[in-house]
Image (tube, rainbow over all chains, first blue to last red; front, side, top):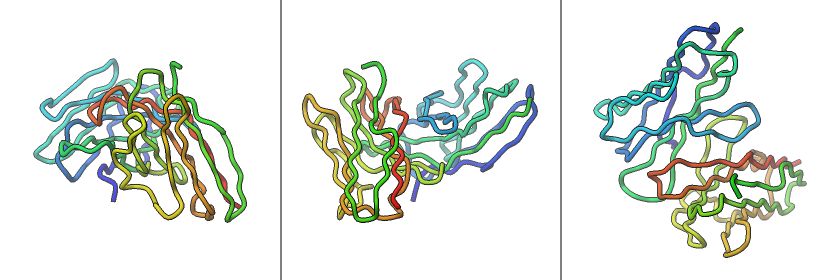
Length: 112
Length: 114
């Protein structure tokens, strides 16, 4: 089964509000990444947080990682209609191998 | 090139026919990954390569799926005797480094099996 599981599955907010998405995973990781997918397009990398980091910021994005709970959250502040997309967390394992595992994603709708 | 190029964008096949998809990774990227996305849901890992060597093929349905990355050629993913459940978007991604690095994705190839 896939490693990362996001919740909620779907989120609808008004423009200007903050959006928080969560991700849980099962095994030990080397890093955790968040990606965005606009409808019909490929994934775009947003941010990477390493297993020894707890928080990371990039523009309006804030990611936290709690390795003891095997969970991460992505916060998008002051959301815009253009943020409407699906967001996926992905984990790269510390046990080696060459695969990054993705969860099922959170669909975010930002209403103008 | 500066981006991952996948061809064809759309492919329609009758059940039992062969399908072949291509991927040109970003120049200088040694690692290539194939993923399958069904109904805009989760990305199922299929296989990864370092240059022309397979490193992880744990996601491949080996009976009908095969993949190659040969020198000086686009990588390919081939499905023999397609089934209805193979209908999906197949994404290729490339990376400069191992699983510790950011993946750069192509726009995907949509396979429809009728």
